[in-house]
Image 1 (cartoon, rainbow, N blue to C red):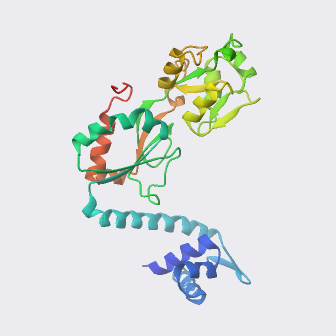
Image 2: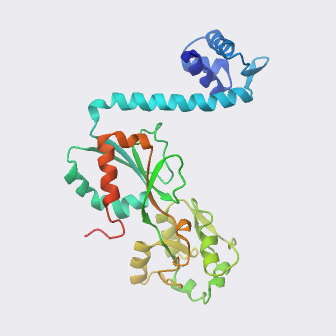
Length: 299
């Protein structure tokens, strides 16, 4: 058995690249840190650090070991968190894409309350996938393509976009190739969405001149309404804005019909497989998966 305390010290040293900084975090002397590293190296029969005067640098063996040690520490932290939450089984922390939260989830949460009225539901929003361990998140609902390995992920709803722009810009579009002459508004989390859509319309090219990238759907929608370029707007927003005369859809609402399913983004339920063992989390996931997200909630 390797000395576990030495592994913890080792991971801290690798992170700081310094015995002194590691000792300050661990509240021990630099000499104590050095002794733990020597103990680990002696136990393994492998030198882990290159010492250059007062500076140290992890070698290839140390970097490899650090990867596996961190994975093990994360598993231990998750186990401790689960055990210490044993008396709070009704708590569930959910992190949701801001757009999905405002347009789909919030209007339906009362239905989940009917199932688990005592659930301590904690909802946060984030565009990117959270760190489940560091941020104490049980479940996430994120926009993307289902590429978050090794997490458990279930597609809830395809987010079929509509090519939208102001009526003035729409007057300049008579064929798909005309899009390359206008600024295109891109989602940051999907650099290839426009190129794939253009390819499905028979257009070779990706635009580029005057293009702008946006982190979230709400900002892209505002930029489209402001006439900054041609945006990719979600179906709910597009139908509302078209009906109000704020934007036009030069290629109709089904512009993505020619694209393969794996090229169309969507909203996914994402979580570590082990989290489904928690009864509250499992109940929430089951409820989420049973909903028909393609149907708009009643007012």
